[in-house]
Image (cartoon, rainbow, N blue to C red; front, side):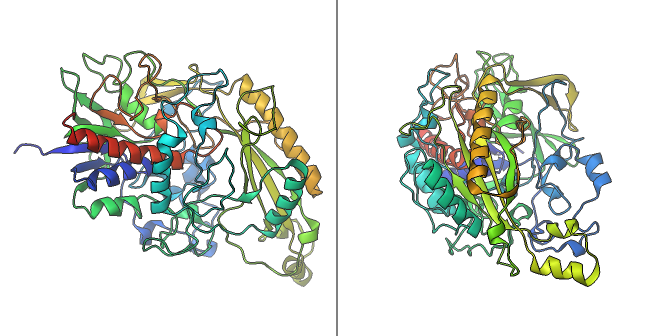
Length: 561
């Protein structure tokens, strides 16, 4: 029996893959989606309404099991007794790095990818990011105007709650009503705007504040990393994949670990080779077009492993650019302190799934805040809130006196951090490890990346501003910002390694996400980022993916694919 050939095969089912599938199927193209992990069942896998006393280890987790099976993943704040199921087994999915350049690769393999436990921060890039024009590196081949209608499309469909601020360095969009700032956030707005002239706004998040396209509004349980039974924040299995399924054009195969793209002697992709996650059976799937949307580093690993006579170093690697220019944001954390004026004996409602945001001002076009010690800039986020019960551990009393103080002396804590842009540098790269393989015999990735002098200089500026903010807030028992940069990869915003550009000698894909040296292979996730900016990448990944899906469909109609 001949194997069915689909029009498009998509590797990955997360933020990128879901949008490509939606756009293609709604344009009447048949799509096969391969996902390396299993489907998630809300009644089994979602835990946002589970109390600690319902768990075996009361929310502290089976530390022996986490150390044994997820020694890397457990370092992510969201990988715990509630939500460890959303993260990979590190022994099955190894990677390597030089001893002096540690890298934290947080991964989720399931239908939906990491969209079950992402932080939902949804920011548009501006031409500060697309066209930095500061003499370093390359510009994107597309501009904000090119991507603006796709930002509109994505925001309108998934629902993003935010305030309209009219700031050129952080463009407004098609927003739902914003969430409210906390009392601490309102105080921060008053103090910071007065001292620095910076806008303090509610964070822009893909949580619904009103019912939207059949999904109910957020109910403020504030445990978004554990799944959401009501689908009140964006994840692809609740939003984009159902839209694609409704067309009758989408087929999903779960537990399909893709090894490589199958290339014909004439240089066209014919399909992919994958391995059943559970049985380890080797299989192939065929399609006229291949879209690689497995996440920046996994997509690049697949391309590097796709070797043939015409692509001896991997698809997209004719000029040796594939794998280079890895980026990930870095943060300066730990700054905070108590706000005595907001201490209370009355517990305020908790559960707001976002805090406040201060957009990029330093070295942003059109702003007076300049720092010539480094290129690019950073943004801040934070919040003020009551301690839940953490303060109880520090009270010396016992018995009734202790319980009374826990109930009636509720401290209020303020925290803030800064997130900076990582420059795209060729010396930050990934390649296939010649010795290490994963549980399915696929070469593991070797990651060689470190922050450079520009990031270190920027970190000093970030610390200075954080310290000034702490002083201006007049906090009690302030904690200074950390002296150390976060570990490379910790922010889970890895981008680059198959970057977009017009020159095949300097880039892997063109402005439509098509691989330069393979006419029917596309890459649509964070791997294509030319620069990263200091803003979270997911909204831009979705906009790029929607645009690529439209362009692939147009190419089909023109007979180019």
